[in-house]
Every structure is written in structure tokens, then in C-alpha cells.
Image (cartoon, rainbow, N blue to C red; front, side):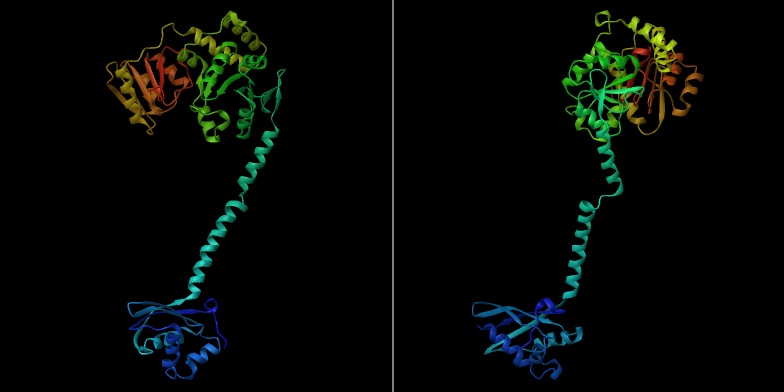
Length: 425
């Protein structure tokens, strides 16, 4: 007898059966064939349909408890929808199985193709996701991987100390000094080619020579070792800027975004000296500040534009008044913090008098003209922007005592104005 399985069926009939007595599975199957015989005509005779494979094996699962039986009947069908529904309805006419009363209720007719279609769709989604995640990197990822490998290959040695360095140290006007080779690899991978390593806690002569010719930025780990390396550099080299990684992190652990963020927040070496009470270079280190200024002046006469700019800046610093920057009080600091919080994202500026009362709130682009035209004395200026040299000069002419901004490219050592950033507050 030909039979079909549930796998090859188009529909599956699910029916519940309740029997007032104890019966076996063969009794139920016999009742289904016997009591539907001749009911639906020769074309829908269950025995003939099962011989031809259009109705599959009838499955019956029974449980007997307390003298009664109940269970489910499952019938696979490859008939069309209408014929399958007729066969299902015919099951409900069965009222007795053996000597016992029985009730059969068809719960639902499952379309197997819908279930298979859902499975296919879900499986296809998972396969596509895996394909995109693991097997199909986009063009950007491929290019980044190739570029990263090339950058690592570009790491060479510089100077007589043979220090690990990026390929752009010699021609760049600005150089980043890090602690070790791993830090050089990290920065070169992320596009910074003007980087060189100290290769130890002592500062090599190569670094000292570079500091006399180029703008030197120290980028160190965010730990005590990093602080010690900065002090060492400040004591023997002409350092210009200081950058520290986040607390507890090493430079080689930073992501590209963290590296850019750290470099944007660099501070002047003079400011770092003041904050950490580090003395200026003196004669015990080989050459005094005056000797260095004289050397810079000689380089300027030879046509080195960069050294000329540095000497001019130092000359301006010597011409600044000898008065120390104003000391901020707790009340002033709290007021500045409150105003800076209010100004975040507004690109605005706030002018205060000596009583810490607000004189004006204006857009940043009108600030310098307002400072110039305002007849009232200005005690402090708070802005939602980085502090520039031009703004500092305008505030000096107006005898402003405090200047507060998001960050600053001007150090406190070069101006009588007390410069504060949001981080200082």
C-alpha cells in the first residue's frame, strides 16, 4: 500500500479525540476508515486515497486516565485545499469507537508550505548576515587593512641612536615623541607618520637635537611613568607640548578616536611646568635659556622660518608684564562653571564686570568688536569656543583679568590674563 509521509504532504489535519472508555490506537484508526467508508464517494474514499499516496499514514497518540481516553489524530494530505477540508470535516461524524462514545474535533489544518516558507526566510536571513559579517568585508575594510600593513612596514630608525620612528620625522616641522616602539606602531597605523620613540626612560641625544629644530610634542601613557618621562624631557629638551593618554591607559591601547581626542587636548609645556612646579632649564643642563634663544636667533638669520617664528614668540613672552596671572576665588570659579555649562553648544560669549554681574551675552563672531567698543571695564569673558591668540590680545588691550573657553592654544605663562578651560573648572 502506497503511503506518503508528513514531509511530502501539502497539508496536515490536526484533530482532538475524547473517548468515554479504554481503547487502543488500532480501534481509532479502524473507526476512521470504517465510519467514513462510502460517505464521501469513490474519489474521496480514505482507503483508496491512502493506496494512491494522496493521504498519508494516520497517526494517533492516546492517553488513558480514570477509565477514559483522549489524544490527537494527525493526517497528512496531498489533496487540494477543498478536498482536504472535506476529509477533515468527515472525521467529526465519528461518534463511537468500539463500544465507547467518542468525540472528534478538528483543531486546524496546517499548510506545510507556509511553515517551510517561514523557515526558508529566517534561515536565509541568518545565512546572509553571516556572509556579510565574515565572508564579505567591504572595500573600506580591505583598504584599511592593506594601508595598516603598509604603514607598519614604513617604521624605520632615525638618528645616531637608531630610534624607532615613522617615515615623516625628517621632513615634518612637528614631531610626536612616544615612549616605545609599540606606541610608534599604534600611531603610524592610525596615520601619524611624524612620530619617534624615546626607547627608555632616559632622553637620547637624538630627541634633544630634534627639540631644538622642531616643534616637539610628548605623548605618554596615563600613569606615573608617563609623568616621569615628561619631567625628564622638560629637564633636558626644548619641549613644546604635552599630551597624556587617559588615566590607566597606555598609548598603544588607544583607538584612533581616542588618539585624536588626546592630541586635540594637548597643553603647552610651560603650562605643564606651572601646574606641576617643574623648574625652567638652567645652565646645569648644558645650556641656559639665553644660550638657546641666541642659537634660535642664529638659525633665524639663516632663513629658517620656523625658528624665526619661535624666537618671535619668545621675544613677545619676554615683553609681557611681569605681573602674575590673577588668582581665582571659589565664588568666581563657581560662576564661571555655571556660565560655561549654560553656553555649551550655543557658540556664544558672556562678559562679566568686577562684581561678577553679566554685562552682555553675544555671539562669538561679535566678541572682539564688542570688547573694543565697550566702555565699561570687563572683568572676565566666558566663551563656548577655543581661546585663540587674537582673542587674548584683544582682551589684554581691554585689561580683562579672566578668559574662560573650551580649550586654549595660549599658555598662562605668555599673558597676564588668567586663562581657564572647561577642564580646569
